[in-house]
Image 1 (cartoon, rainbow, N blue to C red):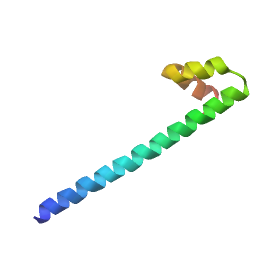
Image 2: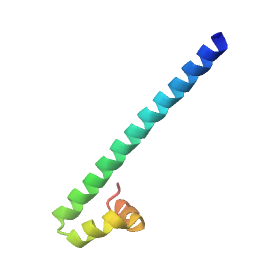
Image 3: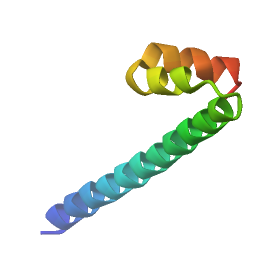
Amino acid sequence: MAIWDYNTSIAGAKAEGYNAGHEEGYNEGESRLSDLISRLSAQKRFDDIIRCTSDPEYRKQLYQEFNL
């Protein structure tokens, strides 16, 4: 029974850590994309905004361009 309790505890801790890390990564990605769109909007680069939402490679180039 003790081994089962230990294994259950470890599995729960792993899941909790994964979920926390996943949420943190998601929030960072959202913030990064929001910053990119704000910068593009300020420069009136509306076509780039549209393209970066559907083209991940182009979005990476823009992140590099703006040092994000």
